[in-house]
Image 1 (cartoon, helix red, strand yellow):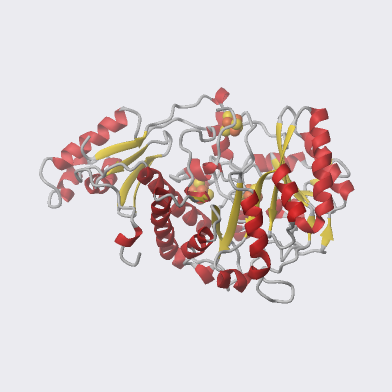
Image 2 (tube, helix red, strand yellow):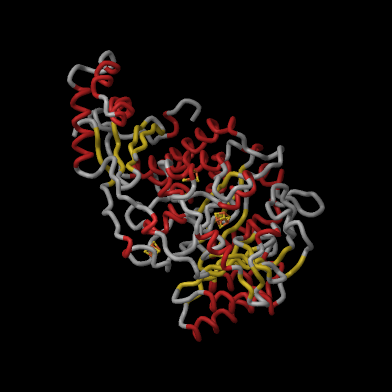
Length: 46
Length: 467
Ligand code: SF4
Ligand code: SF4
Ligand code: SF4
């Protein structure tokens, strides 16, 4: 493509049964706790 | 849902559901609104004078090809079926000290006492809180306990004994507790550093940046700036944690909207794991206003440029909000719900009261129970579990929703008295640093701009007016 360059391919659609095991770290979006916001987190299952 | 934006001169296109990210040229950037409307004729007309004939149609075709391949306007149908049942508490904030050895002017905890008495948590309460967590954690194996305050180092023996108690309980229960701590570093010493290094999985050190910025707000009880008192301890602690998870975090306020200088001042001191966060307050001296947004946005862009430059030239640093792991990111169930306050995560105060999270402490209407009495308000837990991006009107149509996950419930309450109405200023700041994070992601892959014959993205701070 001339006008568009993909730098991150789509991720696969997840099924409800594949998600939400809950073993990853709790997150906090707030200013006072930079422990973790979801965007910076990793999945424990991977 | 797609979002096309410009950051540091580059145009990027994010596809919300699929998580695909594209770098596009100016033509596509101009074309996207028409593409979203599905109106090629209007696009051809409007853009004819700006771009060579044929190019508009060609770019349109590229967008269509992308959409067919699933990398644009993907609709994954993430809805209610992905929400998990509430009922498990797996993460606990232990406010071991409702007292602080500093009096920071913007402190959300009213300088440590949360608007109440200055209290230290007795060991019996801390141990009961661990028991509560283990008992409520169902089948979950990984639990978390964060020592928080006020200032947790003011109740050091309880921190140590609670870790020992937790280590014993986790074995019996077949679980694993991940301990973390947040400190202002004022009372740090070698013994504490050793212990923290051994036992804590993450450490947050509060430090605002440049000395004058820090001293203007982070004061001792006698009103003096605390920078000189904490800086050596903070450096020693961070040095001991080199290569391990920790963050030096600052707060920026209306007094330092040029906060990129604070991040870089910290980097110049040798700190490598950095974060700054916008203050959320109604205090007019410090509050950030919508009018500050353009300046804040430019500041993140400026920081992003210098960030990429330094990392490329071997001056390693991590800025929390620029770290995006687009490959191993959390699952959609997690993304719909976000922080889990009041559901999977709760906070306990020195007298054992349980709140949905540390930021709700002191709001009487939100007391969920007490660790001594084993009382826990499951109806309130369900109420908090229902706070997800599907239910918040502002979030449903927000392009950033799978990264932000619905914002902070405590801020929503503080600013709007409505758990479902995120604080708009926080949203805008979040979106500003997310766009910059995506730019950093693109830049660090060093990909040429489309349509510009392989020109590398500009990442050199000197090349920008006003650097
Ligand atoms: S560990 Fe992974 S799958 Fe489990 S809830 Fe967290 S992100 Fe989702
Ligand atoms: S809280 Fe704000 S930024 Fe976050 S998803 Fe909701 S509307 Fe978007
Ligand atoms: S409500 Fe806000 S402060 Fe509380 S855990 Fe969630 S994001 Fe953090």
